[in-house]
Length: 364
Image (cartoon, rainbow, N blue to C red; front, side, top):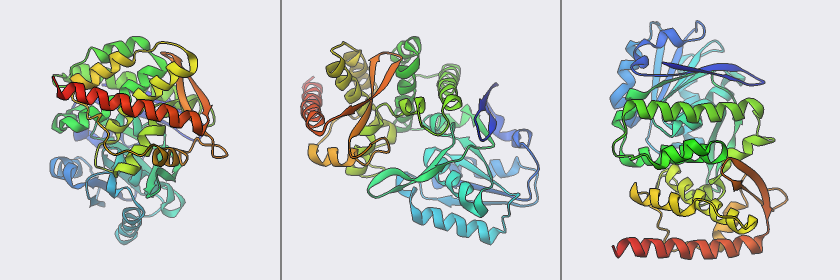
């Protein structure tokens, strides 16, 4: 088992990554609690909820199951979970466990941050994508106008990550998680990036998966420790997300996975970086890897002005000027202001380029 300590200004906690550790959850609880409230989704519940309940030696263990997917990350789910917590009798010495992927972690974490002005919560990720969202303390729900616009910075008391739970993931969830690993490699570690490009997502072993997840967590932890509340270098973790979030809100939350949209956003950020800095980056290599691993990068009937308008809702936007995370080179991220005119031109050429790539693939 690998243990990574995340140190932040508001809280320090451990991230435990290993096999079968979900069955000994008592060992990872940082203290005694008056009651424990498990939040999960309908897919994860079928596989692991009863198993997790049995692993907890406590008289007062409760659970709520929310619908699967990004569409549950809304104010109605948030309010219902507060209602459940009240009805279960949770107090300030209670613990909330987020058992699931990024959606569950974000919603349950935001409930924990706001219930009675804050109670402890533990992240128990069951997706690859959640290696990123479970570390760093960002919790949020979506607004129909934009992703993660309602939320807080609220670190967990611990992260317990059992890689065995990843064996039940479908191809979409594996792709989604690896897009975030690619992002982390691009902003800090070229050797890691090259190792990811050599990975076949259809034949991952537990050892390879655990090693790559641990490296991603190390990168995320190092950035969070330096800048917990995203006033500086933590903004770099948004590489690919300015366009990715905009596309999610336009196409519809849950139609494609978060990571699949981020993958397109990474391509766009790399292409814009090449134009802004007059450099050559591994756009073609990344595109080939996305194609080989069946990422859905086609975009149909996308209006560039609508995309621009949604990108302006990005949390990095200042005085309506869009700020994008770009790359001067691999592991050299920067935040750059981009004018509306330039961005529309970049979007126009990128959307045409994506369309041509899809046409070439279909013609093979």
